[in-house]
Image 1 (cartoon, rainbow, N blue to C red):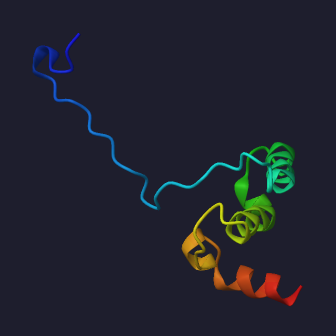
Image 2 (image 1 turned 45 degrees about the vertical axis):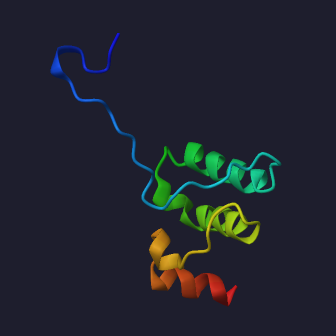
Length: 88
């Protein structure tokens, strides 16, 4: 069946805003991912309760070249969260 059936336009996919990133096929950051998923389950999917764990996961991905290095504020972490983690 043609994609122009009944005058419909074809769908043109667009890339994600931040670009694509490689999957963690080797499981380098798997432990962080599992810890985050467990935190979400324990907190009824309230992501704000697991923000410190998600930051560890993103740090692992950036440290291992699985995503581009970004400023924490660009990833949704406020200045307070960044400075608190740097003290530890």
